[in-house]
Length: 107
Length: 118
Image (tube, rainbow over all chains, first blue to last red; front, side, top):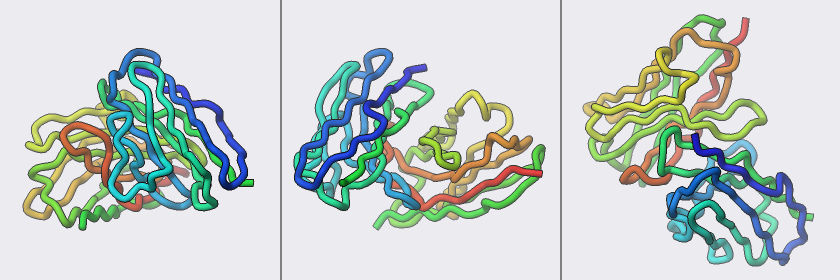
C-alpha cells in the first residue's frame, strides 16, 4: 500500500499570506496525484489533478507541483473562504489512498 | 450538470446489513468508473470500492472484502453498495464519486451517514 503523508497537520495564516502544503508518497506515484478541499459539512471537491492541473472553476491562487514522491499545494494569497481541510490522494495503484489532511485556518 | 445523490444510510446493529444507493444524473454510468469513499466521524477520507465502467471489474479495500458488494443498474443510472456483516468501525459518511478515465475523483455526492451501533 502506498502511504501518503501530509504536513503540517495544521496551518494557521493570515489573509493574503502564502500557504504551502506538502504531501509525500511512500513510493513513486509519478504524476498520479490529486488535491481536494473539504469544508465542514460538505463533500470534498477536487482542486488539482495529475499533480499540476487546476480543475474547472478553481481559483487561480491554487497551484500544484511536484512528481514522484514529493508534492505541494500552494495557495498564493489566502482568502477567508480557503479555511478547510486539504487532502492529497494517489490513483496510480490499489488501494487508492489519501493523506491524513492539512487543516488550514485563517487568523 | 453532473449530480450524484446518495441514499440508504441509517442506524444498524453490528452484524446487520444495509444497501446504499447513488442516483446519477447529467452523465451515464455506462461510461464512468464509479466509486465509494467513506469518512468516519472527525477522520480523513478512505477509499472503499470501485466499479469499472463496463460493470465487470471491482476493487475493494481489504477491510470490506467479502462483506461489501458494489454494483450498478445502468437502466436506472444508479450505483449501489451492499453492506453486510457491518461492524462498529464501518460507521462513516459514505460518498459516491466518479472517476474519469481511472483518474482522480471529479464529482462527489453529498454523502449518506451509516451508523453501526447496538
